[in-house]
Image (cartoon, rainbow, N blue to C red; front, top):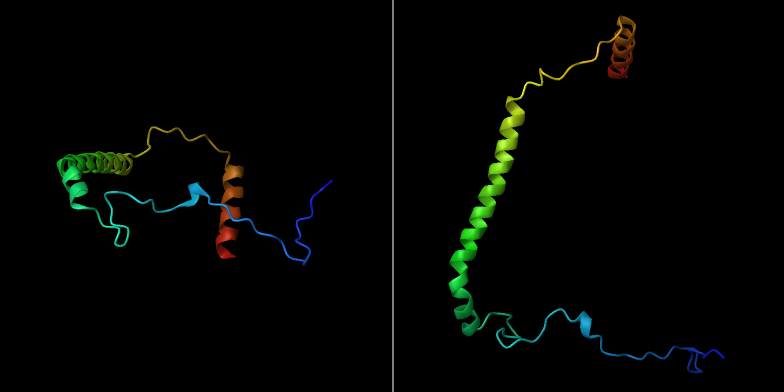
Length: 106
């Protein structure tokens, strides 16, 4: 037997149950629930880590920027002269030239 979800009036009964995983903001002892600002105790607890965290952030940012800069510098100075180009027949060159000259006119 299947249960009828209707309550006899043509509408569904809605059973609302709390869903604990869907709360976005948790109530905490160290955050004001109205303003969401940190309490003085939380600020004091985090203060010793602030300088170390900022130094770590600066170090990681510098490292990533250095890698990016080195990569751009290396690619800009490379001439790709050591990459062999396969030989082409003169007929293939004419076909390619006609193909690309036709595409540029269109």
